[in-house]
Image 1 (cartoon, rainbow, N blue to C red):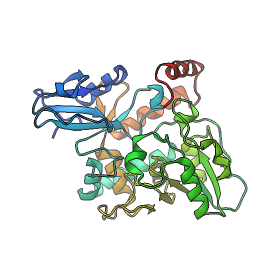
Image 2: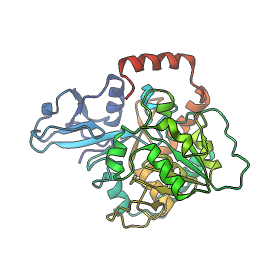
Image 3: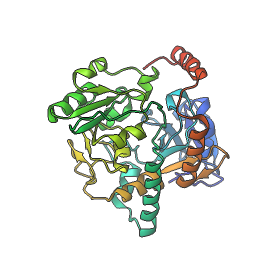
Length: 348
């Protein structure tokens, strides 16, 4: 199967409905293939490869033996938001499904369930994890204001918000699917805790819509934190409760207890407390086995300084240089671009 940047010169990848700003990344992911951008899935001929974004639906009358590859942002993405159309440094390409679709195994789930992880790979994963934590890196690396943990002896729980229209909730949260619903569940289960709620950065930027009754968050938590960097916040709290948020994985990297009220890719491997168990995930993984699968073997890393694919360690170098150059603050001109995006794309 064609995937992960490994192609032959005879292969053509038919990329369906990709925005102009993503086309360079598509070509970078398949350096040895021809790339053809199409607006109709039926343009992919029999036996070809069709690349689609996320959980995009496809017609039932595709040509015979078309291989479907799904692409999404990786877990160490950028300095800035995807909703701001900021170029990604990592994508994942999946031939079975996609990592946040818990209704069926993805390439990542298959990898975690069946791969062997040798000592050399686990040592590499441990060093990668330690560096991510030490440098306080996360998916988007946004936020500037320092947040001080309140002087309380109460157990402190972080609840990261999500964009409620995202496919990760539709396909990975068969129970609770709203931020307020999650907050209510956390408060009911831990009435004595100090609960901190952090809205999703796309919502804070007003590029995506608030969740149902999200303005009522303070009725169910003790504090709402907006602009604190997630890498700082995760180190300050005692535990994290999520639906499917990547913040749960980022908390695991920092060895924080994580409770999943949905079914994210990192649930079901013995590393999290799972409100909704996934019976087919029955293997127990170490933290560094999870890291090896999710950050080394599964994603592709796209250099910003060249048109090459790079390894995760090189990607960390480039991410750190990028962050040092631009900082975490939103420049004035970004706010103008966001105003244009709200007009053109709308807030969904």
